Each structure stands twice: as C-alpha cells, then as structure tokens.
Image (cartoon, rainbow, N blue to C red):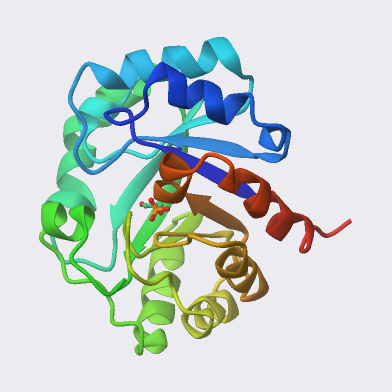
Length: 232
Ligand code: 1GP
C-alpha cells in the first residue's frame, strides 16, 4: 500500500488540489498528516481541506500532542522505540491520553524506529535521539521485536523526511523476518526504483512526503511501483 505524507505547514490549497486531482490518486491508500514541527493552526485547516476533497483515510502522524484533531479518522500513536527519550516513549502519551480518548480517533499504536538516512533530519534533531545505523539490521530487528512484544500494532521504519538514503532492503528484511505486524517504511524515497526496492524488501506501506511536495506527478511512478507488488 502507499501513503502520502502531508506537512500541514507546507501544503497550500493548490498543492492539495494537485495531489487529489492527480489521475493516480485513486491508488493512494492512506493520507498521513503531520510533522515533527507544525504550528498549532495549520493542522485543522489542512485536515478540513483534505476532508472536503477526499474520502481516503486521514491518519495523523503526530510530532506533538497539539496535532491531535478529531477531523482525522485515526492516529499513529508513536512510541519512538529506537530512542531513549522517555518523553517520546511515554511522557507525551500521558499528557495527551484524555484528549485522545475524547477525540474518538482510531488509535494505531506504532513502534517508531528512526534509521540513519545519511544526514541530520528534523525528526532526529527535534527528538534528540540517535538513529539506528543502516549497517546494524540486527539492532533494528531486535528493537522492532521488543516493540511488538510491548503491544505495538505497527512498526514504522523512518529515515526522516528528506533523508539522503532510504532504509536499506537488508534492514527492512531483517525487521520483516522478526515481526508479523505490518511494517511502514518512509524517508528518502524519491524514485520508482527506490519504492520498488522497499516493497521488494517486504514493506507493507511505503510513505512519501518530500518528493511529492516537489513534484506531485511523482505519484504516477509511486503507484506503478505499488502495482508491481500488489498481491491479488
Ligand atoms: C518522513 O517517512 C516520512 O517521516 C516521509 O519522508 O518526506 O523523505 O518522503 P520523505
């Protein structure tokens, strides 16, 4: 499956139109909305703009509790399990627990694993955590396994938005060998070949943000990569 990531601070109405009215848009499975650093106001405006234009599932990919908004359908409740920042493992969750319950959003508990994408990304800087090196697939696999043992429903392998390098097929394969939960992979995917390599390695959901912000027509290539791996 494919998910398109929209950063509310960057997405203009015009950009949303370009995406939603792209002929390949009907092949998009999910829309993730959020970011490591989003101003308070733009989340709701962005979600409402999307809701008017599409019935695709809108899933919050939150960088902070202020991104919780019941205009969406669901939320990836992230625990940054590759890091050792207790705030991002439990602290923010405690702060937002009641707000989240009241929102009625579907909660998808997600073990979020940062992988080194070859540069310091906003998410690694803001979270103050060290990503797992690409050449340590064993650490990624053990981290994912521990996350699933703790009850995470999904695993998200992320090199961070705008990474130079996406998660290596070897690392994705090591994680897939260890867990049965769906594995989401994002960060630094910028070509059809990248997306195909990630699907081939076993990713269940491929996420693209940056490249689609730069060139919405990339959606066609992303969908071609997906179609090559659809299991009928
Ligand atoms: C980032 O996985 C997402 O958290 C998507 O990354 O913007 O590099 O596609 P890109």
